[in-house]
Amino acid sequence: MARIVITGGAGFLGSHISDALLARGDEVVAIDNLITGDTANIEHLFGHDGFTFVNADVSNYLWVPGELDAVMHFASPASPIDYLEMPIQTLKVGSLGTHNSLGLAKAKEAKFFLASTSEVYGDPLVHPQTEDYWGNVNPVGPRGVYDEAKRFAEAMTMAYHRYHGVDTRIVRIFNTYGPRMRPNDGRVVSNFIVQALSGQPITIYGDGSQTRSFTYVADEVRGFLALLDSNVTTPTNIGNTNEFTVSELAEMVTEMVDSGSEVTYHDLPVDDPTQRKPDITKATRELGWVPEIQLREGLEHTIAYFRTIVGNR
Ligand code: UDP
Image (cartoon, rainbow, N blue to C red; front, side, top):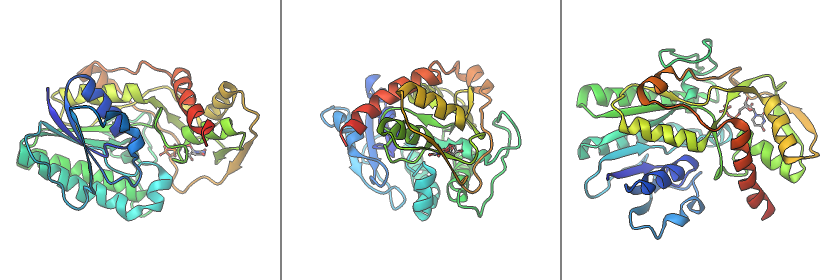
């Protein structure tokens, strides 16, 4: 049994991690400033003995009384439209927020777990992406606020590991989807499902030939816990290796929802990665982790969730 801080604890991933940790008997202190997180994601946990929620911005200052076994830093806007609307907050939580979270972990002699991202690979020139690939990132483009903040966060984490001996974990997360994504989140899976359910046009950016490898949230969170419990201190990809074009995703969603939505084409966002797929040799070898839920099954769960949300709007 461990006592674990999760920054971004009211977010999509943070709330699912809270569920998983509490289910195995750990105690959770969830911290969130609710700029993209939502207490609706965690209200089912408010009566749980092992759960505490703190409304705070971890970019400013971070202190938690009592002993801690781990600090998991998940706070950040994570959708391209969010980090384009909140570029400074995104840079601050990736840099200052990571520094504060590392400081807390160091002071408590706790493990530190960084939520990093496949975006550290930028628009990758190596495919699939292995952890030793350094990436192809535009530091001054609009996505740079997220990509470079996460790259800084990784550098800071490794510095605390090397110079302060903090026990660190770094996960590189690939396009994760599932229940509790916000309907207006802006990411492709939630956009397409909400559009298909409400009969609005499906918005494909570019020609739809760009690829992503979509990971169902339960698989992703299982990977986080395996990494947390392991001794792997260097970055580890956790993502599904089945790669789809955005057009293929649009077809699958419209077919599954049985939607009459038309497909419309829009400008491709600046620096939108052309292709993305994890090499998960390391996760499989070191953690015994493989994804178990493929896209169609994951979409079934996600569509069922959005039916309740969209139906209530
Ligand atoms: N995308 C799209 N339509 C949308 C939202 C996104 O075609 O309504 C595309 C986007 O341009 C990108 C891919 O889907 O190529 C995945 O976008 P998302 O924002 O989900 O995540 P990213 O991997 O870009 O961070």
